[in-house]
Amino acid sequence: MRSKINTEITTVARSLRSHRTPHSDSARNSAIHSDHFPVERGAHGQVRSNLNKPLRIMKFGGTSVGDASCITKVIDIIRAALYERDIVVVVSAMRGVTNQLIEAAVQSEAGNRETVAQIFAGLRKQHDTAVDALIHSDDGRNRIRLQMQELFQEGERLCQGTTLLHELTPRVRDSISSLGERLSAPLIASALAESGVVSDCIEATELVVTDSYHGGAEPWMDLTRARSEARLRPLLRQGVVAVVTGFIGATEEGVLTTLGRGGSDYSATILGAALDADDVIIWTDVDGLLTADPHLVPEACSIPKISYREAAELAYFGAKVIHPKALHPMMKSGIPVSIRNTFAPDKSGTQITPTGPANGRGITALTAIRDAALIIVGGPGLLGVQDVLGRTFATTAAVRTDVLMISQSSSQNDVCLVVSSSQAKRTIEALRHEFAHDLAHEKVEHITVDSTVAIVTVVGQKERGMSGIVGRTFGALCRENIEVIAIAHGASACNISFVVAEKDMKAALVAAHREFHLGELNSPVLPTGSSDRSATWFYESGASTDAD
Ligand code: ADP
Ligand code: ASP
Ligand code: MG
Image 1 (cartoon, protein in one colour):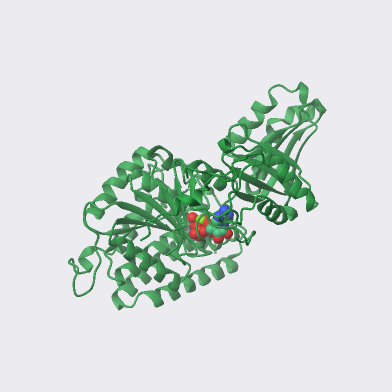
Image 2 (cartoon, protein in one colour):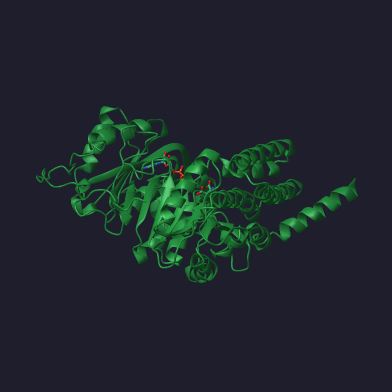
């Protein structure tokens, strides 16, 4: 018995240890090389891109590649775009797959082998069904099945190792959660090949070089640029469409990392900057960046044009449609980013540009973060504690917590921070450790956390005047009997954030959306006090005409 377990541990440990950049064999073997297909466009109707066309990065999210019928739409969009552009495709995992993989990792650590087996069985079924519907040639089907089988086995070995060690390290968690993209990219490359597009699946571990912060790695842009040029440019010259795994990267030493949840948007803009692309399109399941999350505010409508700055604020404060860091790589180069709907490709969606529309309006949109936690470092003794703010923020920075909101009472009795719920535990532990001495001597009375709150943020253009917005928002919330727990108004930023009870979040959004007439597409919404009621609102400038 013992020797069986030892062998199992050795095998698994080897697999965990050797789990470096996985691209080397699997991706290359799986690549749908051009020699697999006729080189010239002809009887098979192959689509090849040509030299000197503008370069576009197109990223498709989980819902867009959710099943075979969605992937068929994706293929149509890529084929249409290829007539005018060179394309690099970035894909997410199929819908729900990353969540399932993370669940498998967590259940493995807890020792629930049966649950893990069920999860993998479900994932195999989901992918098999898509392969059957999309890949018709025996050759193509066998190749992709074999490749997927290897990936599933790799995932199962990682989960077995986690179960045996009773420990889920951040590195292994990244490796397990990366499987979704490593499965979807070859599937989509194969489906493209079936439709006659010469394509090659590339694992982003070959392209995106990151630091070693697992679960939220940051790219090293110079190295990423060099690798992307070396690997992708020759493919572009040959007219091959690269299908790149979103979400993942690797350290310089080749250890796989992930960019954080929802990180495929970031992958797309990192590659856009690395290749100096002409534009980036994020294809998703809604008509662009909307005035609010349409799942919470049904009246929300699409914003045709918006500045990097405002879009970044919206993303940071919860507009999940674009990853909060996705615009960072664009800022230097000014590359435009569009957000468009895979299921309504004729709509032009939202165009995000350095300055946004010429004629803006006071309020652009509302956003919310449901999973927020309010942390209070407080007590009357706080006044006597040296450098409370400095120590608080040095501590949050050390554990890489994104502080979403800060407010401090004037008597300095309380420092309030709002962070994402997923970061609350590690933040509070780190703060208690930092202030342990002060807590023991009652200089700091408490460090508490309330995880039943949400942040609602109003985003607009500072230069259009944000005064009056606070009063109007308060008034609207008050009429709905919604209590505002805390408020933060950036001195230079174009946002105002309110903390409310999580149960009030939806009602708060609906009330503020109505107050600012955000659902009225053609009505100018100017800040209170402005007499310029005739100012042309930015819809005048129209949506992008750059439809494929
Ligand atoms: P993908 O799978 O394409 O990456 P996501 O689920 O990450 O898509 O993001 C799209 C979702 O973002 C939408 O379905 C919508 O519910 C949500 N969302 C939140 N705020 C906004 C907003 N302001 N505009 C558009 N979508 C938003
Ligand atoms: N699949 C990853 C996630 O679900 C990345 C992404 O979809 O952008 O977080
Ligand atoms: Mg997303």
